Image (cartoon, rainbow, N blue to C red; front, top):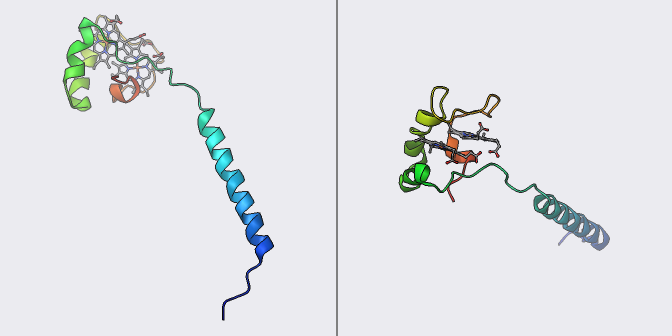
Length: 90
Ligand code: HEC
Ligand code: HEC
């Protein structure tokens, strides 16, 4: 014998489920736009778009963006490992 189903309870659970889904979608759509500067498309950086592996490409960044390079990072720059996770190539 099947247990009797409490239809009203199931109806309420469905409504709660739908509200939760709507809340998650609204939360995701309201997320701020990505604002971190992408890897610039210029002559200086062109070669790094061609290196397939992010890790290999990143080995070169600090040649110029390191403390003694031409374009050192500002003080207070966020943690610096894995440049291309934040500065996307796109
Ligand atoms: C040969 C030197 C050099 C190398 C190597 C280099 N950069 Fe740069 N980068 C510069 C210079 C100079 C600028 C500023 C002028 C410009 O935008 O091109 C700059 C600008 C940038 C900017 C833009 C900052 C802004 O405010 O818009 C980002 C992001 C950046 N570099 C990331 C990287 C990453 C990531 C790498 C490694 C894959 C890298 N760079 C390698 C010289 C270099
Ligand atoms: C955790 C994310 C993150 C990582 C990893 C990261 N950056 Fe940044 N970077 C930022 C943010 C955020 C800014 C400032 C806001 C912006 O770019 O619009 C910034 C700014 C810069 C700038 C502009 C000048 C400055 O200092 O503000 C350059 C150039 C740069 N990053 C290069 C690099 C390089 C090279 C690496 C790897 C060695 C790196 N970033 C790793 C997030 C990151």
